[in-house]
Image 1 (tube, helix red, strand yellow):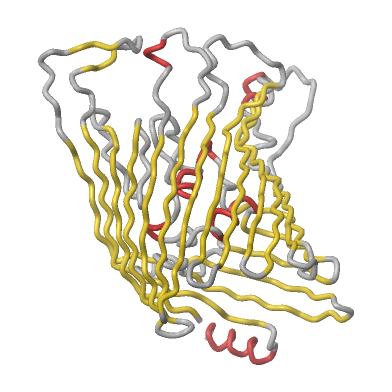
Image 2 (tube, rainbow, N blue to C red):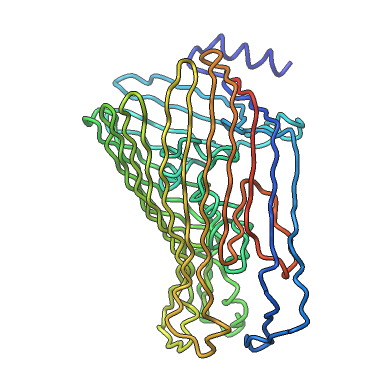
Length: 421
C-alpha cells in the first residue's frame, strides 16, 4: 500500500522523484599489531624500566570477512521534489535515508543522510535541515574513491568515526569528539547561484539547540554550571571554489564546538581547514587535497601551564589521487597520509610526556567496470601503515586492545556490484 501511495504521488506530481542506490560487496578486513616493547616498560612515573628476562610476545592479528554494503557508493533510498513558484522562484525538499541492503536491518527509519527543505531563485538557495558540512565536501569530492569502501582516504578516516588511538581515544564522535564532521543537523545553509562563471560557494550555521542558563542565584552550584554545555554542538563554516572545464578547486573552513564548561570558562572546538583540487587531462584525472584540523581548547581566563598539556592536537593530512578511464571501466588509485601533533612545547618529565607523533599512510587501488549507466562492478584493495601508536584501519574493525601490542598495518578489499535508480 505504501509503494502504491508513492507511485500515486509521483504520477500526480512529476516534480517528485524516488531515487536510490543499492550497493553490495564481498569484503575482507585484517589488522595486525606487534610487540615493540623490546624488554622496555615504563613505571607509573613514565620512566623506562629494562627487564632482561622479557619475552617478546610477537604479533596478533584480527580479521573479518563480510557481505558488506556501500563499497562504491553509499546505499540509500530517497525522495526529492521541486515546485515552480513562478518568477524564477522554486521550493524543494530532499529526504534521503541510509539502507543496509546486506541484512535489511536499516531502512527508511531515519533520513540522517539528508533531510532538507529549500527556497531557490536568482539569489541562490536557502536550505534548512540536516545536510553535508562545507568542510566535508572537499574530503569526498577530491577523493577518487568518494570516501566509500576500503579505499576511502585517511583524511576522512582520521577526522571521522574511526579515530581511536592512544592520543585520541574518543572513537565515537570523530576527531576531538566532533559530531559535525560530515553532516550537521539543525542547519541553515546558503548556496550561491550557479550562473557566476564557474564560481560557487556555500555557508552554513548549525544550531546546537542546547539550553542556556544565566542566573546569579546562589542556589545554582558550580557543579551545575560546570556541566552546562550551552554551546556544544554548534557548527559554522563555508566553502568557496571555481570549476570551469577540466579544473575544479575549492577551499573550506569550519568550526565545530565540541565542549563547553561554563563555570570553568573553557570551550573546546575542532577547527578544520582544507584545500582541494582536480584537473581532468582526458587520459587521466588528477586529484589532490591538503587538510588541517585542530582540536583547540579556549580559556576565558588564560592560564599558565608549564607542562604545556592543553595546547590542543593538530591533525594534518594530504591526498594524491588519479583516475584513468579504460573503455567502459575506470582505474582508481590514491595515496593519503595523516599526522597527529600534540603540540607539547615542554615536558617536566621527558619520558612521560614527550612521545613521538602518531602518523599513518594509505595506498588504495581499484577498478570500476560500468555495465550500464546505472549498474557497475567494482574491486578495491587498500593497505594502511601505522607508526608511533596510530590505529587507523581500512574499516571499523578495531586492533587488538591488549596494551602489549602496537597497531601496525591494516588491509582490506571490496568486490561488489552497485545499482542506482
